Structures are given as C-alpha cells and as structure tokens.
View 1 (cartoon, helix red, strand yellow):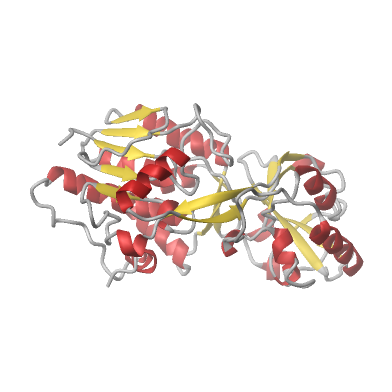
View 2 (cartoon, helix red, strand yellow):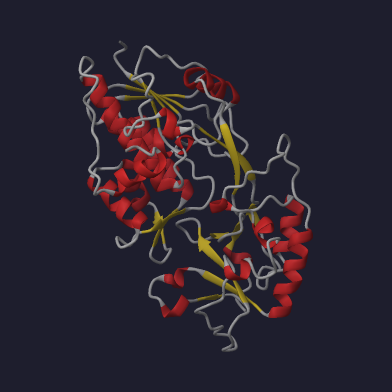
Length: 394
C-alpha cells in the first residue's frame, strides 16, 4: 500500500478532498492537468476554477443549499471558507470573485506541506493505492477510458452552458438600475435592465433565430435543465423566459415609475465590482451573435463582453449502481469518486462530495485492515440527503 493518497482533479471536489486528507496528517498527491492541458471550458491556470455562474446559491439556512453550506462550515470545509473570504455582493446568495477564489484555494493547496500538486494529466488509475477521482464534468478522453475500464460501464454525458460576462462601465445606467425585488433587503446588488413589450418581442425574435455553434457528435441533445441555454429555453414559447430568468415581477422602474414587461438581471462577478454576469443567460450562440443579440437588450447597446458564453459536455458515472454512501466504488474499496462526475449538481454539492470522499479515504488509509469502518453521515443532515438523492442508498 502506498504511503499517500492520490487525488485526480484539482477542481472544487478534488481540492476539498485533498484538504480533508492532508489535515488528518496524510500525504496527498493532487493531479491537475492545467496549465499543460485545458478542457474546452477552462482558461484559468489556478485550481478550483469556477466555469459557469459565480453563485454558490442561497446563504439562508431556511434554504437547503444554505443549510448545506452551514454544515460544511462547521465541518471545516476549505472551499466554503475560501468562498466566504472572496465573496462579492449578491443579496442573500453567496457569490464569489471567481479569480480571487481560485487564487486563494491554489495558494492553500500549494503551501500545505502534506499536499504535492502535480501539474500534469494523470492518464492511469493505480488501483493498488487509495485514489479519489474528481476529474469533473469535463473529464479528459484518456481518463474517461480509464474510468470505463474500472467501472465496466460506458460513460454517460449531457451538455450545459455558461453565461457571458460584461464590463460594468459599458452598461447604460440611464436605463439600468439597482433594485430590490419586492423591496427585498439585500437584492440591490443586482443590476436590472427593464424591457417594454416591443423591446422584449424584438429581442425574442432575434434570439430564437440566432446562429448557434455546431456541436460535433451531438445527436441526442441531452441538455442539463439547470443550465439550459437561453435560446433553447426561449424556443419553448414566447413567454417562457419572461416567466423564467427575465421575470419582471416585484420591480418598478425608478426612471419612469412603470412596471417592466421583462427584466434582465446582472450579478457582480468580481470583488472590485467591475464585471457582471448575465443571470440565466447560459448560451451556445456564436460569439458574434451573442454580441449582436444581447446588445439589443435595453442598457447593453454598448456592452463590452469580456467573456462570451460557451456550451460544454459533461461526463458522469452511474453512481447509484457503482458507489456506496461514502462515494467509494463498491467493486474496489481503494477507489472513490467525488464531484460532478458522480452526478451531483452545483458547486456546494460538489464540495460536499469531496469532503465526504476525502474523510472516508483518510479513514480507509489509517485503518487498512478494517475495511468496513466508514463515516456515514446522519440521515438528519443535508449532506446525507444529497447522498440519498444522487447515490440512492437504502
């Protein structure tokens, strides 16, 4: 048995798992293929890169995700601690400056004496040592082949998308305004772009007819509902997005005291407040079409896009069949999975899976002759509820 635990993947789940192992006095080899290799959706050389929205969802403990974050805080989750440290205004949600968040996590990983960060693609899974596979939804082709070998199952995949990011200085505040939905305290950190009926319908027509990027080997069109591209959602009906991400309820336009027909919201994306992302505007439109169509939105006629939206393929395993309640592979007690590759949805959920896998891998390492010893979270916790949902244990 090797004298260290291997973690493959330096995303949210992988970094959380590595930290939980290292704090228990065990050496970790953490593999991350960046910056030698980048997936189609990644561009930041740091660990724990946030690809889609910069929101970790609600901080309110009456909300399931807010309660999950509180559980993770009490369990000394590194990633939640770093999210709190690099948070930006987002009403009752926890949103982060994605660049600073990745920098902070990377610094902790690289400075921890028990963690060796290896910057190269891992193409082999050593089944003789304890390994956590946290390669995320954008697992490389070589690693996907390795996973198929050890699971004996063909991988599944679906597609999701990310939204564009805009420079605040390019927003027209003669039209845009900060405001509270229903006067709700804390929501004034969002920038609101009101649209009247004519503006909305003109935008809608251009949106549903805009050119999209051709996706190769993409016949079944499995789309993740939680990150539905705005143009696909719009094609379900003229009012679909007006009852979704563009819903105007609870707002009055302070410029003319009217009720908007539709509203586009922008959420702060960095600590300085110079960048804002388009809430709910995940897209697969061609870059030129994004510039043309989204600039039709009132207040964005001169918008400067620092990052356009992209669509990417997600890979995951059949967790209910393959994993136990600690994310341990049923057929090989040395192998764990964590993060979105297990099917969990969202940043906080991925962090939670990394924490559970990391703690249990450490227990396994320290009790090599007591394979049955595991940390099973109580059924009253949100962490266990997540496992019940995604792993489907009885």
